[in-house]
Length: 200
Image (cartoon, rainbow, N blue to C red; front, side, top):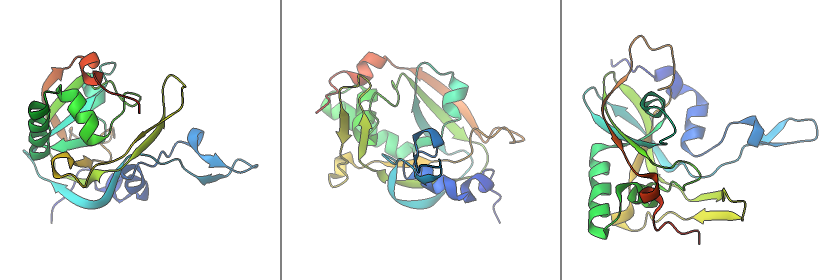
């Protein structure tokens, strides 16, 4: 029987909610007059989530903010597997896009969430559990305060269908050894990652 390093985090019901784009912060929750949480805000995340086992030596990729350290980015939950990253690169090359912008379009990541200035390639060290699924539509306030931005998924178009994975618990300090190992870091130009991005 396989021992998964993040089994406890994965089995926590909150991990499935986070994978589906639920913001569990009480600061953004809908509350009643007594401060009791009625509902949590939800946007983005994945749909039709399935359980995925990640095996040692598998390569995974994550885009993160240039304002964060490599370690901070590597502790985040959202990743893509190697075959999905190769599909993303193919999409970028065939459409003449910067890789950061291609990631925004296929993984549905608006500039408000990340400047996509850092790309981390990591290797799985210990067996891990993840949620896997296709990107869900995004509705989020525009940073300038000029309204709400809607980014509908395009999963019906094969070339734009990218499966993402959410790995719960990577930021947990209780691991005896890191469950993933960063192999390479690529610094991307945040301006290029947003070049041509339109708020429609």
